[in-house]
Image (cartoon, rainbow, N blue to C red; front, side, top):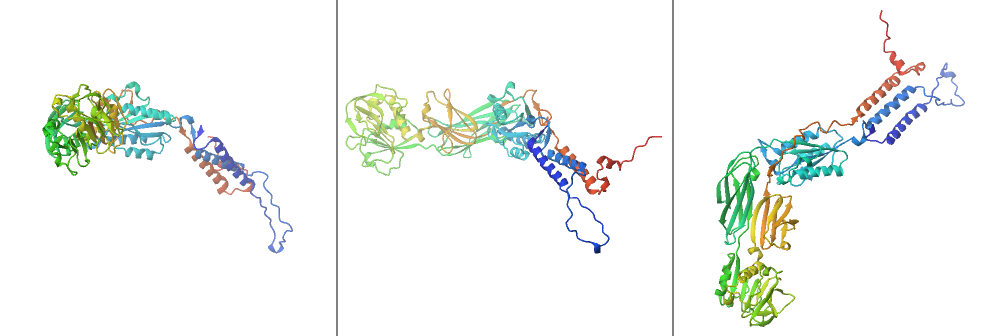
Length: 639
């Protein structure tokens, strides 16, 4: 036995204090003497007052013993005396409540999450009052909603406030988290209870040997029919300035084949439609292509009624496909026209040098072999600037030159390795700390760049010269220059509607990891990992995530619910149902109700015997047993 609310020393101290007070009241009671006189007329005051004598002994010891015993029993009830071992007085349970996207599915008129909440609350109410419960919301990541808590109101409120998320269920991770919490923060491990469905990620389904030893399942009745959109992807067509490719993947989660009508629209205008015949547990992919330069909303919709309507529709926002406006100031436009027309995202306008002015409406400027009156306010490509008044110091102008080195660490030199480029006429620039060198020749810099706003690139040769017509490095060089000066326009773009959780992005072979960025909606970086040309990152909330680098941008709209791609079948040995709220009956027995009842009865009997009934003086030493015999008739022998 042990005290739950008080220690043994505290109980003894309190009982001693109460017993001492009762004993003092018995000993300090003054005795009185009754004096009879014939008449008040003959009363003569005493010369000295009568002496008050304290009692030498307790006249009613049974009354005192009954009071002390009754108060001791009441104190033991207050201290909550228990039968058992204090080490096993309570157990710590972990309740895993499934809050994955699948729990928003409906079976009839009721959501699966509502049934799971009902089962969880019923289980909690079967637990002994001393047991503690931690509520954990399990989906992509297990998230504690409470600490180990004995207050059932707090536990039930956490259960009722739980709602389905957008991610899939990672069941093994939830089980591992529950066992870790019991080891780190628990006292005596109880059950790990899972209330929810059986659908989760195939890579995270638990094996039988990894299950918690005290696992209980509170299953829900799951629907048998569901079809959902798994991927909704848009990709710019590289060879077309206005075209988008659309990829759509639809999965059948049900147990029977489905014929699903599909409609894809952009700005309420139809892009594609059809009917998908999908086998049970299979996935089908379709592709469409449409042309637009405007920004707008694209939507894919499955025209079907099933258990989870949230994954029957996907919406993404497409950015404007705006071409870069390039103003070319030259007297020989035919030399540059083939290079400008090679990129479909370049809209070039050709003007003579005399048309240059400070308020040109353009995005990029190309100045071909002349000096402008004022420095331009736009990003500018200078082709063979004249020696006098050039924006960069010229070492020598004219004469042949041979390229000796590419500075491949610069973005403009990406993919350029040729060293057999010979120029009949070239302008060589001086090296400068404010200018970045892209390519070198003997005696100086052939191609230079300035990253300060506005950006500028300096070419010491004409890319449209007849001697360079068949050089493969020239079109790539011009593409790199335009992409460096206007990266937003020339960046290859993908827009995906994905689900919350782990996202994997395939990279091109040889991608530079140092140039990669993963940014959230606020532009803050997210951690990511790289493995075998695959970038992987995780996010637990809905929103936009951008992956940038190596001339490519992928926008992930994390909005689709992930219902999971596999079903877990629990082993037969696992407990199921509400049960009796624990592994076995609680080894602790509460004694305080009986102690309180016995103590109150003892004090009541003492009051009835010694307080309410005025006993004569000669009966002061009567025992409670003798008193009770007055009310019980004596036994007589049978004749």
